[in-house]
Length: 217
Image 1 (cartoon, rainbow, N blue to C red):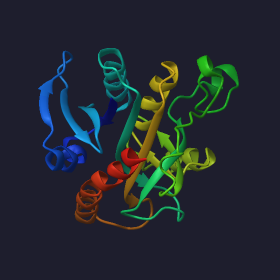
Image 2 (cartoon, rainbow, N blue to C red):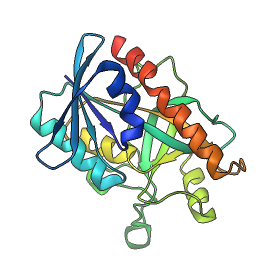
Image 3 (cartoon, helix red, strand yellow):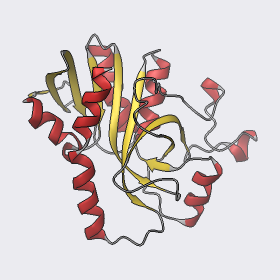
Image 4 (cartoon, helix red, strand yellow):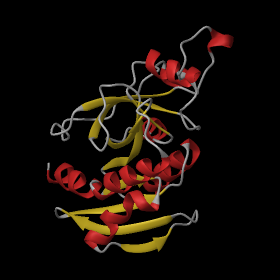
């Protein structure tokens, strides 16, 4: 069984409607959807926004279902001219740029002591049809100049609020995982709010074909 973690209903909507997934309620109150893609059973959980929600949802799937691997997908912002709006990327490494013990322990920003690393590494072997990108995750929307500098210093080109939390939980449980993301806007591009939502709708509509290709592999 494939476990799928998605933050927002609208990001999962096209997948759910296309396969006619059956909705149930999880014990923790979050929504679950069950279905089949490419002859593989899946359970999809709507985690909600943020790292804690994403971590709770991922652990719930691992604890309650015979999950072979986890897939996380969703919308992200881009932060350099290396990313394109409405394009999808396979995440090959990710970090939590708002986790900062540098003033206390003289360690790099994002350093997770339990793992002796800044980065977690999703699998990409079944996502070779997508370009790779490095993801920075935090519990705030990335728009301040100080945040942009931190993300760029970590060599990341896309950012979100869930991905690396999923990665840390999967790594903790020794569970294989894949992360792919769709870019809705690029920092500094000058897009207004209306354009952002237009791009978000386009990106969300395209998650299903990417997921099908991944599961076919």
